[in-house]
Image (cartoon, rainbow, N blue to C red; front, side, top):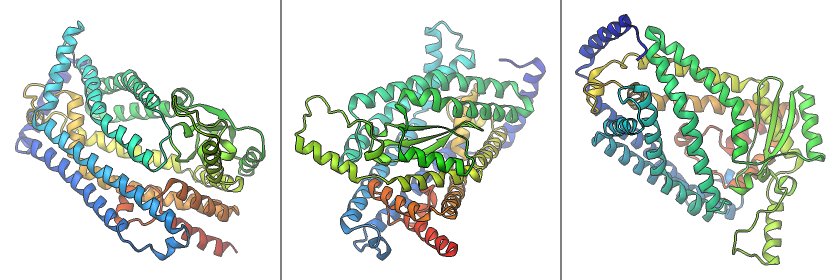
Length: 477
């Protein structure tokens, strides 16, 4: 370990002082309790939402926006996704509780130590063992999630007409993800552990600064190097849409450098658009599903053995052309995104998230040398840093849920402000039309329970946004 003799002595004294104050804390019971409570809270919210959707009466305001058939399809999709979420949460909670009851963390740490010996590494070196433990823990979690993700993608999403990816593409995505997380995430975690061990009294400042640098680096690297490993980004072709988007950027002195279309349709029919880049190097990405008629460059390739008749191909093409937004509506969507940029919403959210992370690391310091906490989970003579972080994250889970709810509230407020920006620049009607179309195409939940929405939704509901836009339009006129 990279401590001086004085540092080791100092931390040993701190550990003894803290352990005497915390020896009576029922660490294992707290982790079990908070894990189950977190699941019960999510279950309660989901049951509320299911009851709301099970009401056979379609709310009057919704009937003005979508037909009875469209509403029924949206409800069916929402109920399926909610049922799946409830099932997967229950399975995940049972898996976590069972893992803890069987001293899974200590067992996996020992496996990592044996793996270190097999690889010719020193099992007493915490950094090597941490790297191997991270890899094993990630692979375990990924393997547990495979059946659920397969079911969600190839059963639920397919049933409702959204899934477009093949099994081979799904497998390819999983392999790439596992390799990237293992090769990049593992070393980053080890470096973070090293900083915590080296940092002394002010470790939380150093490790927070490290995570900030890591985040900014990832935000720069991901769209340019990592995202292209999964999707194809094609420059938006010349035409009315490109001209209108460039005109919009010039109108607001937005430093637009490139316009891309991404082939999201090879995985899903869901649509999206986003802006990325720092400073004067902004780029806009439009999913081809946002307007298949304008943006989809090539029809989806047929799978082997899945030949379609000309009538089926024509019907599919007509269906694609009927979906998506018009040019003014896409421009209004980007106008909304420019509202986020103009009001520095991303910067504000990043600042808040960093304050939150700094507090998390500071509070972690109060338990990082509590022997009773580690002993409760099968570590009577060791205090691995990564284990302490995992346990502390479980202990503060109820607080994190409250913080999450507050962050969702702020994010919804920012969405209202971005909508107001678009309305202020005379794109309110087009934005409202776009929101309705996207909601229909995505079969969005239109009958939302308020408490469920407060916790889960990062955006206001469609009805809330339309009502706000209508009021702003009335004031503007």
